[in-house]
Length: 104
Image (cartoon, one colour):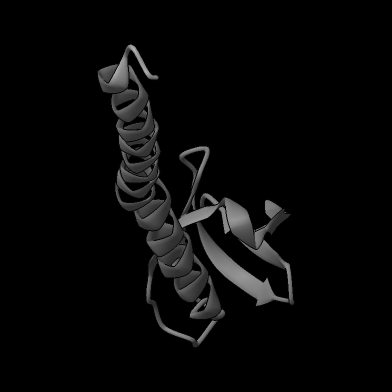
């Protein structure tokens, strides 16, 4: 004979509610945190594929420069009006690209 039938059914429904609550929290976390970050990463990768010689760029450290040469992972950037200031840097450090003349 079960003296507490209400407790037996409430613990089963409590476990089900907890499971649904956890799944809902994971879904909310995915749609508000992970998905936008993946979209931003894909947009940045697409931006980096468009780099060409002569483009003006902004680096993640705030320097403006002009692309002199492009390889697979590295670009050579000329900073300032001094033509001897050419620095190789990773493509990942580029934040913005402004298309320029490819006559350089």
